[in-house]
Length: 396
Figure (cartoon, rainbow, N blue to C red):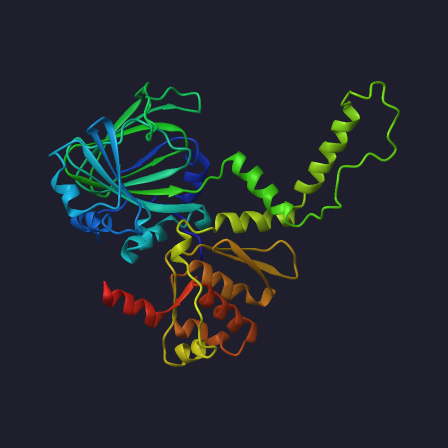
């Protein structure tokens, strides 16, 4: 079973991209998606921004204040009051609400799926922009309607000067180095911290695939919090064989050495680090959309016997890991379980597919451990019965 993609949209080899561009320099791919037709119109995107559970923003360059930020959910009146130009609507995680949009993420299988954060879609009136800025993560920008002019500038960091703004991180010093106009089907890759400035030439829509990149501070604080759950109160700093101090008030080098070895001994636990990382990177963006549910114990067998499969909850995140030769770990929406190695093909199927058909799961129907795993994922809300997802579609 081939799981990774060997080429990027547009034809470049994945090896060349990862070697020469990923996290290094921008790449413009003309007609990465030739003839691309968006499954979502501008009106439908605006409709999503009216929903309470959808995260959305509008940025007006010349609003009540310069670069005014308005947060959703919006109303239909919100759009009637907008000017004819110089504003942008941004809707986060559209892939979690529109299955046809989520399908685009399959084109990025040359990268770890657990690195993908979400697919944001922006609609801009002519002149619309969010200002010159930089992101601390990689992003692919796919033009799906109209034309947007992208200006690329310098590499930035936390010391780069910003405009005084309560909500937006807009660069006060943008040093343009390159410029392109993207038309439908074109895609631009930008590495982290590269300044960029997109301006709509006409009414346009842009899809942005962003990636998760935990900061060093997040890694340190979240991992140590995870470790602390498993440390007893008796595990404390100790200094057996203490030497007579020259000055009792001095914290000497031997003390700092003991502390350093204490900390290193904790963080060098690779298994704990891998377990924490899998849980952390699969935490859902919107946990409220992954709800536990009480199920009839016989539901799974009834579904499969009736020819129905299972659908991954669009808000669930899944990944797996194997370090030892006697078991593997499945990470699902911030939790993990330990599984026998013979379930690896099933785990890969679960992690890599949005739909698990009855015929795909049939070989596992007599495996008690496999059925228990699927039942647990159904109960946690990471997987949904196909019938339920069909009913939800009918209700929309």
